Image 1 (cartoon, one colour):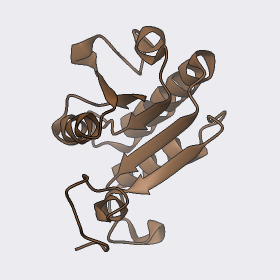
Image 2 (cartoon, rainbow, N blue to C red):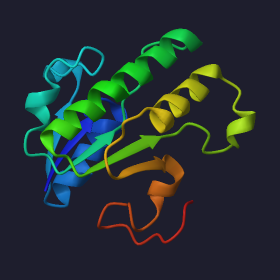
Image 3 (spheres, rainbow, N blue to C red):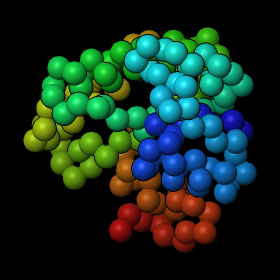
Image 4 (cartoon, helix red, strand yellow):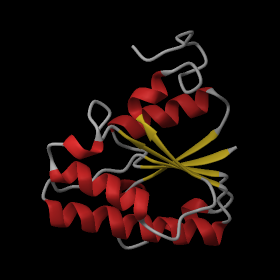
Length: 152
C-alpha cells in the first residue's frame, strides 16, 4: 500500500515512515525538503499519485495564532484538494495537541489553531481520521513487534 506521510522527514514523520516500511508498505515522505510544499501546493499532485492513504504529521513553523491558523487551514485545503484529485481513500491526522487535556483547556492558541484547521476545513476526503498520539501507542497502531494493549 502506498502511504504518503506529510511531514515525513521530521522527527515523528521519519519514524512513521520507518514503521510503515517495516510493515511492508511503500512510505513516501512529503516535506519541503522533498519538494512538497503544502502551503503552496507545489509537488502535492506528483507525490500523491497512486497513494491509498495520507498521514499528516505536519507542523506549523510559527507559534503565533494567526500564522498557525493560516498554515493549517491553507495546508489542509491544498492537501484535501490534491487528495481528491489523486483518488486518495483515507486521510489520517496525527497530532499531540490536547492529548493530556480537553479542547476547552488547551493553554496555547497554536494548539487550538492546529485542531480547528485540521478538523473543520472542508471539503475533506471521504475518510478522515484524527488520531491523538497517545492513542497510537496501542497494539493496533504500534509497530508489529509491540505487544502492548493499552497506552503507557
